[in-house]
Amino acid sequence: MVERKFQVIDKYDFNRTYHGIAISEQWQAWETAHFFRVRSIIENPTVGARLISYGCNNGDGSSLNCTKTCSNATLMYSSPQNLWNCMTLATLGMLVGPGNDTIDRESEKKMDEKFHFGTVEKFNSLNVFRKVRDCAWASCSDSTYGNCTSSLQGFKCGPVSPNNIAKFGRVMAKPYCQAASAGIDLDIAGQGIVTAYIIQLVLVLFLGLCFKLTTSWI
Image (cartoon, rainbow, N blue to C red; front, side, top):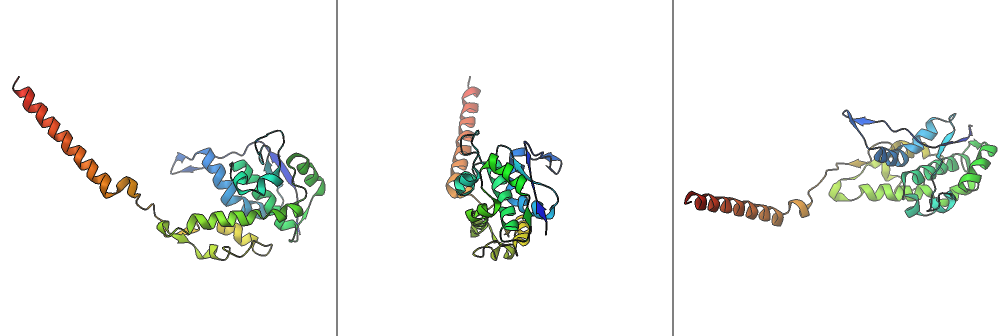
């Protein structure tokens, strides 16, 4: 049994690179919030769960409301900061509510005064993980670009629970699209486009030849 706490951060430092090339900070923010947040909280029980100071913003930065934000998928996915806070609260809600962990009530009260989510047990009823599961499944179930891995299959219809949340965190933190490929966009490389390119090339060569013949007589 672990007593969970909160901490507020103004900024998270993203400094990962890919083959020496800096990855966009905005991209890393989305990636970290969606894929890695659950596992990070579970694997670091002694570290206060971080909430971003301006997350759960529904258009009025002076009145943050995680209950409203996280109960609506559109609002939840409107910014990586919103998603970060929703994932954080959902993870603690699952670990503390039906789970065996406890929460520092003083820390929880301070966070509620700022982010308005009630208690983590109450927050658990917003079904944040169902929205995340639906999003993850939709992103990999299109057969055009591969399909979902077997590790995600169990979460298609089955809910996240205290018994499987650690597994869910591991699944989300790894590639859950198998045999994925970029595919061919027919609007870019279709037969009509290829034909148009050939016609343009022929016209350019023809005009160039005409110009050459014309200038040679001058």
